[in-house]
Image 1 (cartoon, one colour):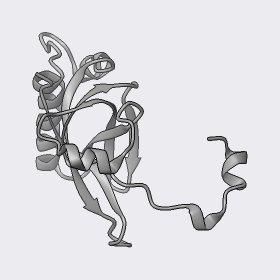
Image 2 (tube, helix red, strand yellow; image 1 turned 135 degrees about the vertical axis):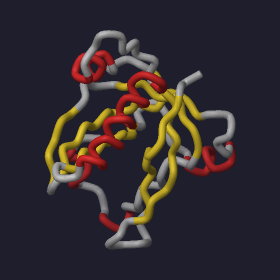
Image 3 (cartoon, helix red, strand yellow; image 1 turned 120 degrees about the vertical axis):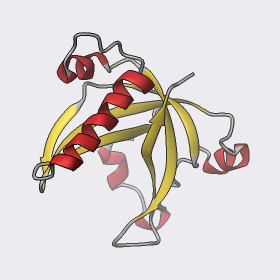
Length: 151
């Protein structure tokens, strides 16, 4: 929908989008990883394009949700706390697990940067949960806080 179409819509007709139902989804890393800083964290973000729902996703919830899975995106963030060596070590291990065990990238002789560069196009299972907005509990978002191997 173009922005011009949005501007001509009646405001009363706009409803909050329903979040993707909870459960596992097969996803593909669809873009190069993004690197950002926020507050006291260095962040690596992977964009995950949903391909299909796992068997345990409630088919009635999917039907009620009513959207197309293709075109849905999730993100998997890895937050490295700048002043917390133990937190950095945990996140480093979690990133390694994601790249090697969940995406299936061969780590032999490679640095993290190389594995991160190879992530685009690789598949994984993204576990979707719902999270309430801290400022407005009536809003609920689909979040991917865990991943696993696609097969």
